[in-house]
Amino acid sequence: MSQHPIPPGEPPWTEFDEYLWHTCDIIADLIQGRIAQRPLVATPAPLPAGDRPLVTGPVWPARWRALGDGSYHHSQMMAMGSTSFVIGSMLGNAAGNAARRREATRNAQPRWVPGDPGMVTVSKLGAFVIHPTSHSDSIMLYWSGLDSVDLVAPDIFQTQYVSTTQVPVTMRLATPWASLIFALAAYHRFPHHPRILTRGWLPPGFEQRAAAAGKPCQPAAQLLLGGGSS
Image 1: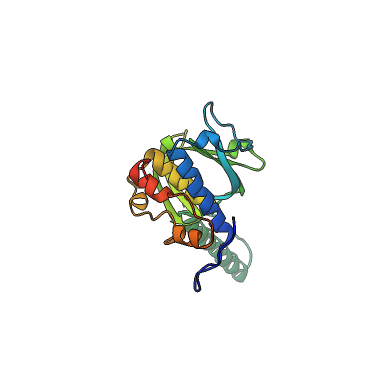
Image 2: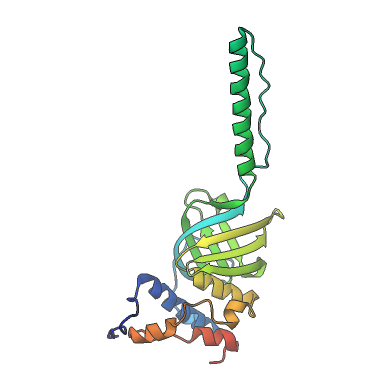
C-alpha cells in the first residue's frame, strides 16, 4: 500500500503505531469471527486446548509489593575496654541499628518491583509471560481470572488478581502489546470498562492518523462499543 504524507504538525508514523495498527486488526478479526483465519503464531507458551496464540513480544513485568515486613536484626553489643572505646563501640552499634531500622522501614513500603524481562504470548484466552530461565516463575494471566484491568500508559497494562496460592497480586506488564492485552481482557471480562466506553484505550485520533499515513485500520474501538456490530 502506498504511503501518504502525514499532515503537517502530526508526529511521524512509528514502530509503536504499527503495534497499535495490528491490535486494531486483531480485535476486529476476533469480534467479526475471523480470528481462525489469522496466520499461526509460534510460541513456547503452554496454551490450553482450544486456545490460539495471536502475537508474541517483549515484556517487562513488575509487581506492587513490599520487599520486607519491617523487621530487622537489632544488635545487642557488649564492649569492654577503655571508656572511650566502649562509648565509641556503643555509638557505632546504635548507628548500625538505626540504619537497619531505616532500611527495614523503607523495605516495608510497597513499590513497583521489576521482574526479569521475558517474552509475552497473547492469546484468545490470556497473556502468558515466559520467564527466560525459570518456568516456575512464568506468569499465566487468563482473562477470566482477572479482577481489574487498566491501561495506565499506551505500553503499560495493569491488573489485579488472586494467585493460585490465594495471594492478591497487583501487576504491570510493560510491552508494546499492552493495548491489545487490555482490549482482549476488557472484551472478555470487562465490556463496560470506562476506557472501552470512551475509546480511551487508543491514543486520541489514532484512526485518523493511520488513514493519513496510508494505513487505514479496522474500526476496533467502534466494534468493541457495539458488541460486534460496526
